[in-house]
Length: 178
Image (tube, rainbow, N blue to C red; front, side, top):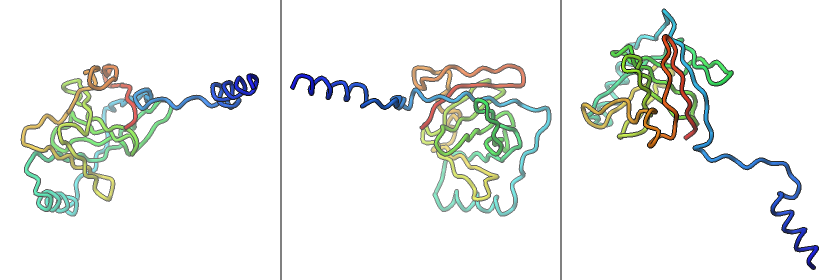
């Protein structure tokens, strides 16, 4: 009986011999991102149809806060050893701000080169509305004057992330999943 109990205990403790690592907590899953700012890059211009879509969305949602339009660029996103295209958008008015959308399951951030800050999205009531073309994303702030950067990654107490590193024409940061 004692041998059976020890066998059951060992099986539970060791996972019955399976070498499966425990799943990390969401806060422990991190990606190393970097954006290298080229001397020149392409940014899509909003079409008339996209401008009508923006006006219609604002009107139909009754949005009264600030609306920020971000347009797709050809600036690549470096995610560890992978280079991704179609993830970096530039603010249509403030060219020093980039919206980085790594994927559906990773946090979006706004990079502000001028202020040398990276802010998280999805805080302070900020919402993102992508156009079906993938060339434009609208960011709605709930009230006029809401700071678009949300919570800066440098605020480790709130984000759990290391501060971003701005180095000449490059910025890098570590960030996790949603």
